[in-house]
Image (cartoon, rainbow, N blue to C red; front, side, top):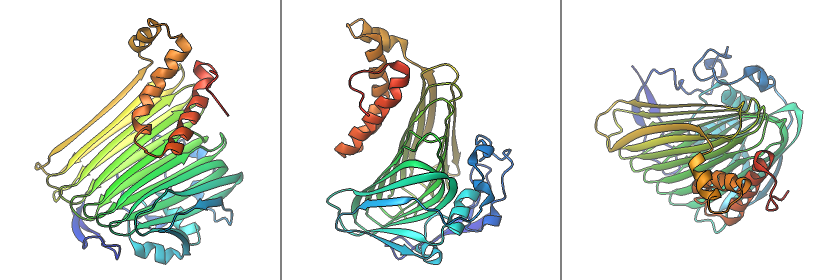
Length: 396
């Protein structure tokens, strides 16, 4: 084995850790160098589910001056600035694990830095709007959370675009961060993103990911720990319609002892050739004694012609752990639940709606921000209208 260094930063994180590099086809070695990530053929483990031809040329890495429209609402304690690529790298965090993330950093021409310092009294909101699928947009965002800060950040993606981005979160010691990431593009959009989350000592992160729109969305979320005691929840919902490809990949790298992770993603599919992919991987290193981890993916297939791929993985290098496990389920409407509801006078259309809402509600209610919860419930109603009817509750 070779050794790798997890760097500390000036953000109040623990000192650098010397770690053995684990050779694995499930998680390539991180690097900002595009040449370290060869152009995929589709046979590689991390690419075999992705329809490369539908990436609309992103893998070629052609530079572009196109951009998304930004609109932000920032409470006191949150600031946005523009920094250089070198300055963004110096902040630390997880380097790109695939070619698209490396190209995004290389071609973005700098980065947008969102700095959080203190306890925010309202969510920091950023809306990104795409205006065209004809030009490629490259993005690089860095979120730096000062030690012992407390914040909720909401990213909202709408419109039409061809977009590749690398988003780095560097969360200081003792901080508490919630991120709500809503992807609700138009049906022609292509979006590839790597979210890299570095968690400081005793810090807590909840990362919510809701993917509803787009022709193709490929989202990779990677986590490491910069000190003991860190806790991460990765929580996601996706809803694929006919022809959509929605792919979510998580890699949680337990690089410190007494850390915790919980991954829970739920998906629904409807329509011909709707395709979802969920790949979960947790690596428990030799140094990560006393950790606790679980990952689960559940899929609900609403119509014929849809396909859900679900692959949970665990790689364990130490026997001294508090708990580790994974689970995956894929099924159709629960006939017993439907029968129970209909036997109590609820019509079939409403019964199906209630079953799907019950499937998703456990994750949505954990957000704790009322207007965001309402936005998601409304979006799910619109998705459901195409397959189970159009009740009066559905609004545009």
